[in-house]
Length: 227
Image (tube, rainbow, N blue to C red; front, top):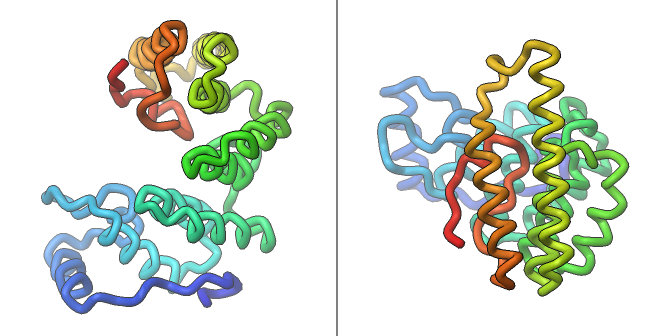
C-alpha cells in the first residue's frame, strides 16, 4: 500500500536497483524523469526501469496524480492491464489532487477507456467513450481513439467519419491557439498531426485494420504509423 492507495509496488530486483541508483548518482536524474524518458544518455527505456523509478517516486509523493496516471500507462505498455486499471480505480476512489479532469490526457475515465480498448474490450470502451464526448469532444485525441476502436471492430465507415472529427478538432485547436497568439508556445507539429490522422483515415477507407498507438494528447500524433 502506497499512501492512501491500495496499490503495492512490484518486488524489487537487486540488480535493477543497483543499476538505476548508480545511474542516478552519476547523473542526478530524478525518478519522475526516468519514468517519462528512461535513463538519460542510454538506450534503456524499458518498462522495468520506468516502473522501478515510478514507485520510488510515489513512495515519497503518494498523491502525485499525474505520475500515477503515467505509471498506469507503463503497466499497460508492459501488458499488465489489470494493474493499470487498479490504479485508475484508486485515482477515482480518492479523487487525488493534482489531476485536471478537464484535460483529456489527465482524466482517469479517459485513461480507463484507453485501457479497455487496448485490452480488447472494444464495446465497453466505445460505451465509455460515448459518455465522455460532452467532456472531451474538443480533443483531437478523443476522436482519434474512438475512430481507432471503430476501425478495430470493422466499422470502417464510422471510423473514417470519426477521423474526420479528429481532423476538425485539430483545426479548431490550431485556430484557437492562433487567435490567442499561443501557437509558438504549444510546440505542436500540426502538419505532422494532420498527416498522422490522414494516414489512419486512409487505412479505414481501404478497410484495413487499425495499427499503432492511441495517443492521449497532441504530442503523440508525432509518431509515424504504417498503413
